Image (cartoon, rainbow, N blue to C red; front, side, top):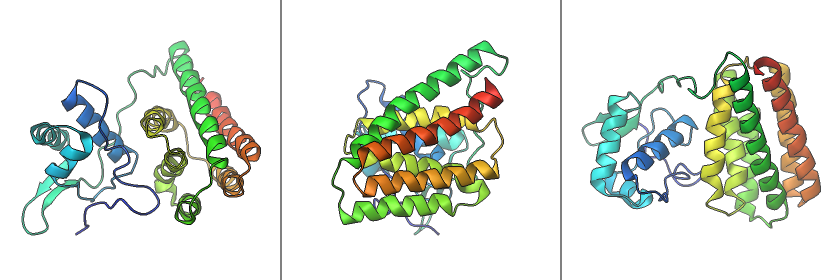
Amino acid sequence: MQEPPADTGVLSASLLLRPARTGNAFESTVHRLVQSIRLGLVAPGDRLPPERELAAMLGVSRDTVREAIASLAEAGYLAARRGRYGGTFVVDPVPSQERDPTVDPRGVESAAVLRDTLALRAVLEVGAVRRLAATELSAADRDRVWRAFEDCRDATHGDYRVQDSRFHLLLGELVGAPSLVPLLADVRLRLNAHLDRIPLLAPNIEHSNRQHEAIVAAVLKGQPEAATLAMEEHLEGSEQLLVGFLA
């Protein structure tokens, strides 16, 4: 039986479980929990924090948390277990992601949505890595960056997208701007909806791993220009594949 996700390690499981600036408490709570599950911050089989802790983390009432958990249990994402080691757990496997309803596979609208997602990703991630490379990181955070790269490099075929998402989110987290992380998570979910529609190609994974290593090297050496160029090259490769298959 797995213990609750901890806030230590490569990427904090509670990264997205923060108060949101919205009056829709229930919807916001569901959104943050689903994001955390779909991006692999809380893995299949992991236990969620207790309701009291989740309510404090999200800045909502326990009733709101209880309603959100009940709704996600009904939708097949969560399951309750009783007993000494009980609690609320992410189901294993997680339900397959529905195709993004904004993505029309028939043509112009699909291409427009795809290009919007890619442009937004480039603005956020290139700017983030440039700033990160100009930041003096602690020894612990430098280790987290390297371990995130290794986790992605060593991932199985089926786990690669999750580890890739975690790698990119970690770079955003370490910038130190809490408002940036939800934006990166939102665009990553949009991106993954497109990536799920194309094949995972072994040569592309090899290229991505080499590019990740170049990004990490530039960040750890404190080289903003090199980090910017490495990230731009990395994102360009993904864009070419996605546009080639989908646009």
